[in-house]
Image (cartoon, rainbow, N blue to C red; front, side, top):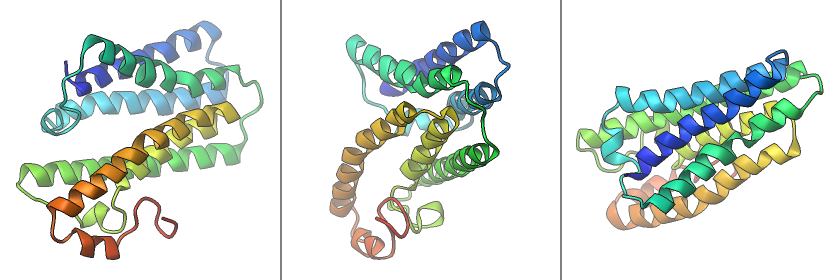
Length: 208
């Protein structure tokens, strides 16, 4: 089993982990309904991407994993990722319009950034490109991770609990070493990477 296959199982696990308690508790809460629409649509899109873009299985998370490693992936990506949803179900406070606006904005822009960046880079690599430094990647070197963090932050915003921020915080902690490693590899592999760094931000434009 590859890492990608384990993550696919985890996405299905998240959907089940969210749907069962939501259906048991009822769908009267706007907070829960909006949360489910965001998180479930994301999981479905993740699974659909592999059908629409077959190169994903050749480029992303291709390392083989042992059964124990796969189980840990499912526990983290499948179960822990459902935490904001459970917190949303436990939150009986009214969902304010401003919270909805912020959450939806984070989700929409995050999803667009992540998808555009991944599709652009994946397609470019299939066509034989080396360093991808234009389009979605022009100003931010890890724009796909930025999009992901915005999307996971949208879940925390809608959930309305401080504990729900554990998810985007843990994702950021997971991504930081990856970004550092990728920077080092690109600097070693691509002669134009240094010039690219001079005209782009690491993760957040105008901040870092």
